[in-house]
Length: 65
Image 1 (cartoon, rainbow, N blue to C red):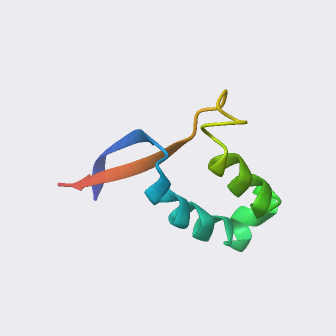
Image 2 (image 1 turned 120 degrees about the horizontal axis):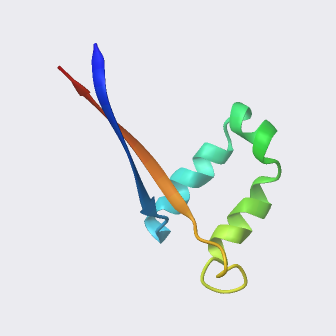
């Protein structure tokens, strides 16, 4: 039984891009997020053209007691 969970946010780093890329390939994600290349362009330009945006990953941790 799960009776405690925690969600944390962390800034997206270069090392996270391959995971994000794979995530965008999932059919149930793609139908909501649209063109993969648009998202990857935004992520790759996050320190330039899109520096006004902040990108985060979230993680969920579950404690089993």
